[in-house]
Image 1 (tube, one colour):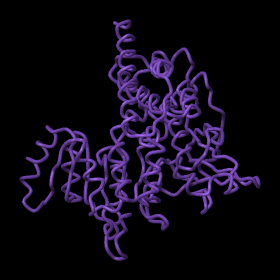
Image 2 (tube, helix red, strand yellow):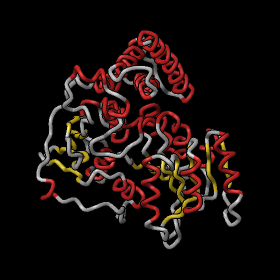
Image 3 (spheres, one colour):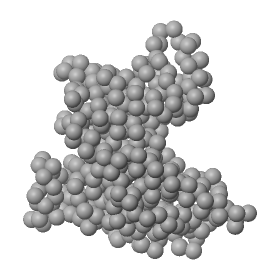
Image 4 (cartoon, one colour):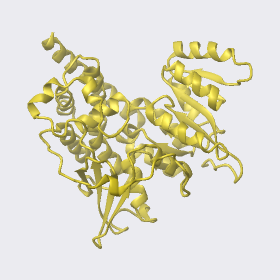
Length: 407
């Protein structure tokens, strides 16, 4: 049975999974503005003890999960000195599922980056929660399984990615009938193009992790910043959009929009194109999904179109962004292709950030994994996790080969 939101006048319980990351911090900033509407039941992080300690002092959660056992022990010791604070510290990845399905929580912000957020997102879906989905990899890896869980439990899945949240806002009320029945011709996903949109192609081989993580418009974590630089992020969003809105890859168009003001658009059969605009600030989609169908203050500066002056658009250069091409191919292939794509990309990005491979090696690792893995169905969680593990091993071997040549 789906969890119900608290009656009017009572604060709604929320758990923020990945509370020390950029989306988690933005979420807590919105919650801070509305203490009468929301109460934080749970928070989670991997190992950022200092940030979590400060969050515990301010939001006073009943439960906290630190996935790393050493971090959990350190946090427990620091919280023990706070006599008026009753916070239980849990550890281990399995504790994320406990937190996501806790009866005291009606809303779950799923903001854990990468495949690590899959099982807790599934747990929240099975428990019938309102899920604010910032973890696109959960849908990329297990789209059919997750959407089935949402339907069966009557959970509510609301997208937090600015692009998908924009699409959701521009869709008709009867969007559950499918694009064609709703009069939708296509979805237009906008992309900033990242920091290397105009960098000469020959210079991309020398890109450093710090350069790749310097996004021109958004303040994001390092992994997602690299994904934006390669445009793999937009490829994953393409796959996510297909699951969220029951679309085919051919019904999703990707357009580079350097200003990141139009977050996405929906084109209709009558020639209308609806767009959602706003300053590039994640607090806007977070506030929208938190209060939907109402609207609440997000703390975001009003958009000044006159000061902005112009909005420009261009087609993505497939030579510059081979990761986007790989993602589009995986979206069309279906089955385990998206799982392999995501797993190989996570391994490759981690290796790049560690200095083990170059920036242009990222698509090479992903392409090798995709070409070396036969396509299979991804109907069960076991199949999904098996494919993910195999792809990571294959990508790791390729990384080792590249690293050995660099030494």
